[in-house]
Length: 283
Image (cartoon, rainbow, N blue to C red; front, side, top):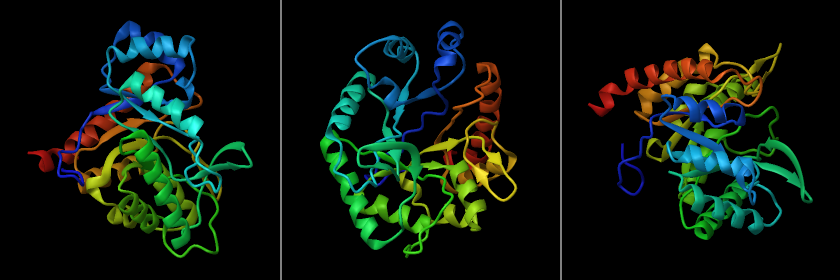
């Protein structure tokens, strides 16, 4: 698969989110993980143990960087102090790419630590695409934008979420991190067909896939990242691979974090699905 510039889309293989609970195990056992994703904000510091372990693990594995607080959809000005610290970390890690979410996270300098959805309007579309373009220009590289899970919708929305995401990527000329669990969660919560979402995605812009677990309530699914990946999410991932071919995929786990060996077993299933369904596309 080639990207929008006609280059072959990089394929890193199958990875895990790097978590502090696994630092020592990773260094001691050198597990069969193709790459790690780090949460950028955890390492945007001047020193200490996080950077110590980051540097040691980076010697052995490729990495990508994933942010949670750029708040690209906020009405407040871009935070250039945040971008400067992000740029410093990029220079240190030399990641394959970096990403953040299509959302806003607070107002009046208050970070609510939630990934809040945007209204899917033409006004919001122009606004957020311009902000993404400014970030890319400032940092000197394309970024990946991730779809979020959502639990509310806006009466003002004029587009579907997938139409909005596709148009943002086209207008900003950015790349996509497609979170399969988030698509499944939002599809359940808002009663749409997740396959229709996949069908609308520009395959050449999809550089990474997220997989995670969620919590099923009576009439709602919450994206908690504290359970193993659910079978319907695996099935949706298989459909994504059939449509998009080989895409670098990884597992997020942020709570009830199990031993590393358990995540490696889960990653084996992800790898098997990815390799089986993408064989024809790369033959």
